[in-house]
Image (cartoon, rainbow, N blue to C red):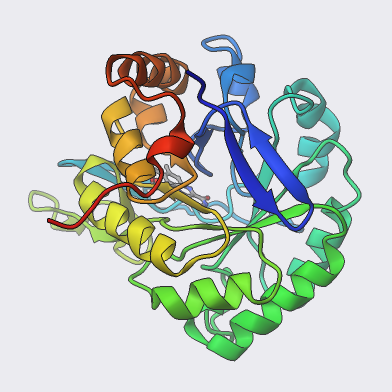
Length: 309
Ligand SMILES: Cc1cc2nc3c(=O)[nH]c(=O)nc-3n(C[C@H](O)[C@H](O)[C@H](O)COP(=O)(O)O)c2cc1C
């Protein structure tokens, strides 16, 4: 039995030791976790989002644990990408565990400039472009909201990415799956990450204030959204020729198998890392045990096997 996963990409096959990787914003920059788990056990590492220019963190309360999930609204709380590349990345096990940077940008010019800079960083396997962008620039609609703009973005980013692998991550909203997956795959994207979060709010009825985020709320994720996020993954898989990386609400190995059986190649783990710092290492062990128990030899054997009743 093995947990290996192969993702065909425009740069050749990307082989991951297993399908488990961190989701941006929930695993620090990786090294914060090196004392509690073996980082090299992961399929891939996606650290906190980064931008070309340093931004301002949100001054409102940024995180709230609600019933069945988490609401987060962090703003641009990134460290400088130069600090990450020079001081942190060399300490990650990038030779055996591919590292992908999730990118935020203010506009297309900044995005392409940043991808072009990162394309020269030998320790990086690739970049994950967040379709919520442009961040903080309300003059330009988010990339995913305009088909022509999205296609242009994918083409321009691809043109400067060199040999790096490019993933595109779904927005924090309900989105037109086929249109977005097509725009990504028809213009050179290597994989689609099918879920980010949905919008969420919470009100403290004692103080009569919204609990999180300067605009009243943020992205809602965690166990409560798993059925919805699984639908996003499955619908993406139905239309995608490129690999789909699922995620959303995963808290155990059975959840991982649900995503693989719905068609995903790999999965991202988000808020479960906040509940238990060594969660992903334990999840990989649990996945191995579950597959043994279920006599599943490889994930290829079960990918997309779920049938409608
Ligand atoms: C505290 C927190 C911060 C997050 N920050 C980002 C981010 O900066 N960029 C991003 O693309 N997604 C971000 N996300 C979304 C996660 O990457 C992930 O897609 C989402 O949490 C769904 O997975 P989960 O249900 O396992 O938490 C964040 C999520 C949380 C909980």
